[in-house]
Length: 542
Image (cartoon, rainbow, N blue to C red; front, side):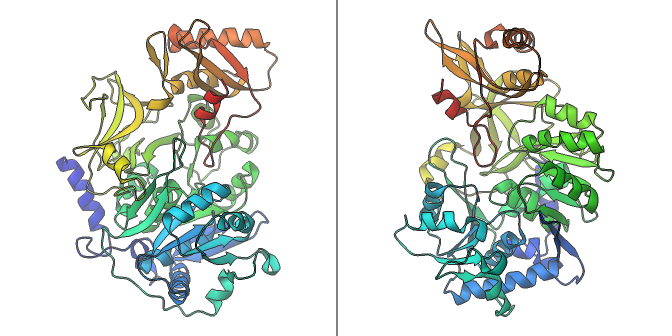
């Protein structure tokens, strides 16, 4: 580890309320440390009906203490697992904080999971209790029937107790009659805090063990890419069922004393825009697909005056989205790349952190504290301008310490002190990184490796294309060719002319070998629960 990286981690440790060499607790650093400041704002939750809640750190800390007492009363002890089938709502944070402070392990579950996905995660995690919002209680019930062991269920009810099933406990009713004296466990940096499952787009989802020190791994990203501090107001659109929502744009900003805004309703561009304006949000963090859907209100109403920063992660940020967003007067989007195993390791940095202006389709470079390089299949460094697998040197702190359910897969990712990912990229001579896609998604045609992401960027720039994907398809003479799957935009361009123009542009910008030979049209591209493109589903349909 370089002296520069060491200095970054020293700074992170110096900003904590405890010495991590002796003790460390995620709830204390993300909330408890500020609880003595009676009026310090932690969270604003806006609802679809126009109502809102404002929570101080003190109030969150008290509610977490009550929930911790409830969990203890249910017989849970340090090391037991508490699952949360919750979304962008205050209960997500109360449950997580309560679990962390009392030495339990929090298991976040994404509310978009189906029956099989929920059952697998509940069974694999050995959860003893699950807190569920009434909106997903029915789906949980179906999953519970597939389990061998019974789980205690605590439901966040709707109006008039809606969603409560016989045998459940009501979350808020339990808290109302519970004292704020829940146990505080003496945890250390390496103790498990969270068990978070990967999205499972390739094989069974892996359960990442995230220790209490996981929080520290994403603080450099929050400081240097999000660029937020106590005087900012951050709108976090990411779901806390995933690492980006729970840690990178959740617990890490909280630990820095940054107040955040959540919207609890379904995605609604007009509602989001109203919240941004009415709350005076100055930093927005969302997925690239969400920015694309915000073009309507941006065009009609103009940029939010207070908004000075925007960040994206979770999927490639294409030039069309970034260009149209900035062209509407909004701040340039700072892109980021991370993984649940290590953290946010590549990003566009703020000017204060030494970053340059964002350039669509590229990333500024490693997040301070991380050393990232490109290697070939034998783990040898590749030359500048050549594609390679993204590899991260073992940092002082990282998000995960292993896969609980797949230890052999975790061991296979490491080559000595180098974590080798399945993602491919190129570093340009000027030091900027260009993400190419997952190794399994690369298209091999006529002896060339074609990055689907590079082809998709070109296709998506055409005004006649709303969304695009590129996958391999069988060629007429054997081998593979590039297949473009398109969602058309409103356009008068005939299909034949559109395909001709797209082939010309891909040939000009990527190369003739990458030009699509097959075109298909769909109403919508298949995506998983977090909006990531499911290329495997497109390949099956080839």
